[in-house]
Length: 215
View 1 (cartoon, rainbow, N blue to C red):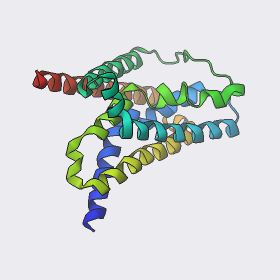
View 2 (cartoon, rainbow, N blue to C red):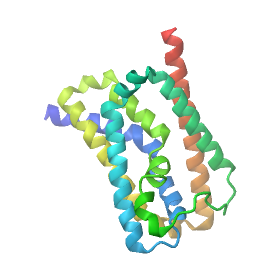
View 3 (tube, rainbow, N blue to C red):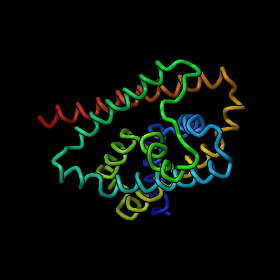
View 4 (cartoon, rainbow, N blue to C red):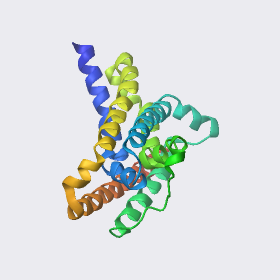
């Protein structure tokens, strides 16, 4: 029972840290706009591919992300600052975007399979902010308090939970749009943008605080 409790806590930590950054609900609305006019079968296929790509990208970031940074001589706090700045820019752009603005990326249903990774997975679903958080989680020694078995399992289960949430939200995007209506959709996007902006500031602040401590 102790191992199960530790596994649940470690997995919850990973999922809770990644979910606000990935923001499947907000991203699903962007996905809906980018795939407007697609046949339901094509959109369903894209959702499956995006969910799988998101899982693999987050998993790789947690497993080997810190090693890649070491290879290039980049410290984790620098990644937090850089990722935070990118997230701040994304949140600010979302706040400044006017209602009804067209998406800047035109997608072709005939090339749906090529679009599943870029831009629909990276950066629409899993962006630089999500990757930096996943790298930080993978390198976070404090998670060792739960024990190595729980930590290793949560490295797989955490991204899996996020990928499942992406699948559910993306498949429900049309119903969400109808449920919220035009006004509700605008409010939801603005609220999501503000949360993303705050998350970016927090990421950058954590990185700057760590860099200051290292000095």
